Image 1: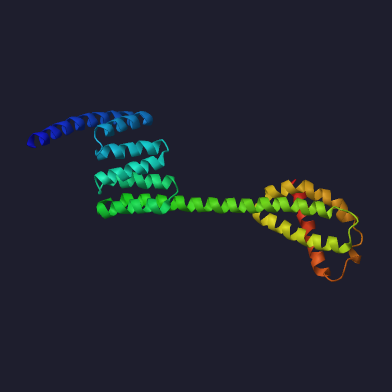
Image 2 (image 1 turned 30 degrees about the horizontal axis):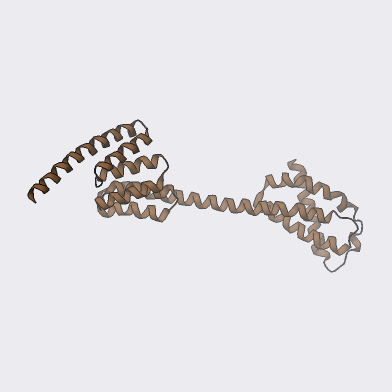
Length: 247
């Protein structure tokens, strides 16, 4: 029994020696920015000794350089199984979560570092600031994309309305209602898409002008909505003037 324990100890020492040598080779490859080779050395080291925590954290760091963030997180979790107070594991895991845009998880990892080592508060604050800035930037990008999609939808809507209003021979009420809808759509487009949208719509709007000017019966339009009708025409006239200035 005692002999077996001694044999196991000897074998472990030998494996630890091999694993350490492979770790050092991995570190050299990492320093040379050969991250794939570094990962291979660290993996070979873990094949020798599965519970060597530095091999997990070093491989996690190499995975982050390769953009393999999920693999990095997995290695950090294994490192924490080897040492639940491993600062590097929480540090690399926080960075990996941040790269995956999982801001709460990233924040939790960095905050855990302060719980373990309060002296690292300054470093942690810097990382938390980075998480906050990335979260704000991502939110702004999302809002910008939503505005773009909204503007794109409006850009599609306006030419369709112009095409319908370009149809001659309709009853006056048809043009009255259509012009009110069109004036509102143009206003929405202007707010959400700006100059580029005006340029895209200039051709479609100019196609509609002959029909607009050929409708000589504006005075004969129903008097139910005289104010809104006049307002719609003024909006569209201002819009067309804006297009002329831009083009």
